[in-house]
Image 1 (tube, rainbow, N blue to C red):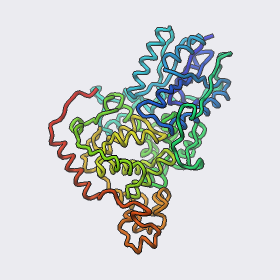
Image 2: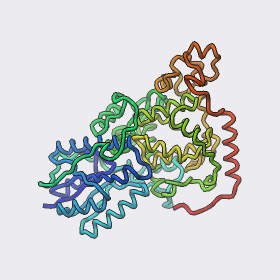
Image 3: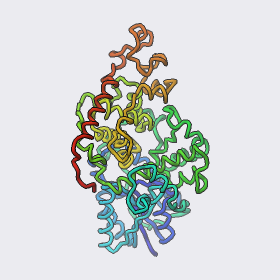
Image 4: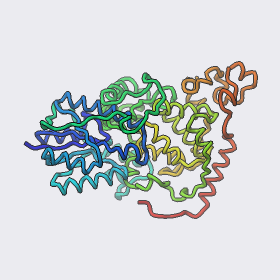
Length: 483
């Protein structure tokens, strides 16, 4: 009887899982394995108690789904190469299947795992599964990687798609195998950080993700082009499930379009967002130095102005700008933030407070349940005007008050997350510091006591940001080859 391992990473599902489907088709017995690396979880570049807590819930759900098919999830700890070789030897496995990934860490790890398995006489068989298309294959006509989204998107729409794989009816696990025990968050030396009530938090796991995906495809996506920027609705809120692979990006695309070409403007608009996800994955794959450096060489010496107090006010949602504060408090409560709020908060940190985009990237990666290195890094470089994008920097200096008036016109988003502003009338909500003393008293919100005064003046800081970027543009490029 032949045996194979399926190494789960951030593809925690049984539906449309190419490594699992191919292993089940080719082998008599399949060992689903997850390797828990405590060193990585607690001391990696972006440790995240909130994401780890969600991960543990997703693993429990995956174990249950595999159990319904006659197997279960085998848990091991330690560096992946040693753990996988040990399980392969124990079960006499012939091969290990997994879904390939793009981050610098993942690629180094996978090379080490491949070498260790081959030395042990075990085949290493990476498969697709994390993206809609083969992001390495979406290239220009002369074979170069794209660095601008629009032409990437056009090529991506025409790129081949793999078939959506059904969930296996049964997975045969070898008998007598110690499956291990899933630890609690505290067992890993971590404490929960999110402050929101359980009722408003994301439920981890494939079943919850598939339920949300089905509802979105059935009832939500057709208004996406009109409502996607509305801060109180319009988003699929599927990103945590996509990050952990509780739902498949390829299956989601297939459900949204229902045929090879987009069906309608709204569905095309949402499919475009899946294209952005693949684009940033491709960028990090081809330009791994982006993980730490600005893509645009000319901005690598941009004059940031580190200020601990300003950074902490931003992190805490105490900047005095209601939309920025609402987004930052939503992030702290549920580990997620509406994309429009992310852009405004990112612009405010880098253009109004003049803080390094990497400080924002790190804070988001600590709290976001969908904290994906490629997408988070790509979005931060985009809003900081230093990444793979041709738009000039002055188009990415967002006025928080004007964005609030446009995308939260009734104030429901701001009032939900900044409750001290609930009594402020609509016409004053975007700029509450403009209320008179009498208006503040009537609203029950005294600026400087109940809610902070603005930490900066947006108009003045906008001019300073433009000066900083002009100075960086005029300076000689530091050069250097991207790796």
